[in-house]
Image 1 (cartoon, one colour):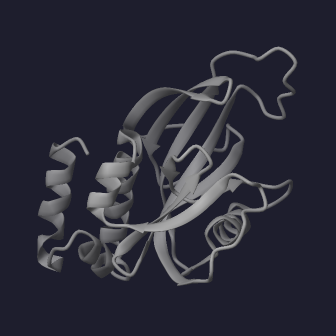
Image 2 (image 1 turned 135 degrees about the vertical axis):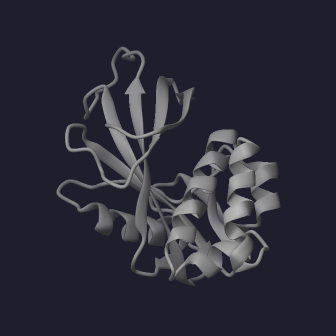
Image 3 (image 1 turned 30 degrees about the vertical axis):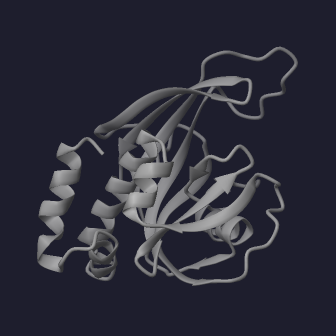
Length: 201
């Protein structure tokens, strides 16, 4: 995996200690298994987020099923977790290396100690009434403003939001939606995103 490092953070995923290393990237690595895909997606001037059973907010997405493409996984997970339908044309903007820092006795590991997840940026075409997540992980769906994100999301998720917005601003088809989310004019978008970088958002 190569690209500019966006952040490194250690977390506990249940009992599992992991190190997460996010890199700016427009391609998925070929030497590490891709286990999950997620998306920073805008809808109606807000960003789509989901809340898990612990009360933590994040971006919708999830694991690839056996022999499933990342495109099919992203569409399926968005529908299962958030009852959302994506517009075509979403783009990869970051990859996140996941390293298991210790093996838990008795736990069966389906993947090697280092895997990767992909982060995409795009827009939502439509939302249906929310339903129960088949995996039982997601408890609710929300549409957040930037202020909501700053109040409720972890720092590394704010960095992913910033990078997703940068990717959306580069695309003529989604640039206006990024400006709407940031409540600025199209011509101001570049300077607003530069300010977000300087804030280390």
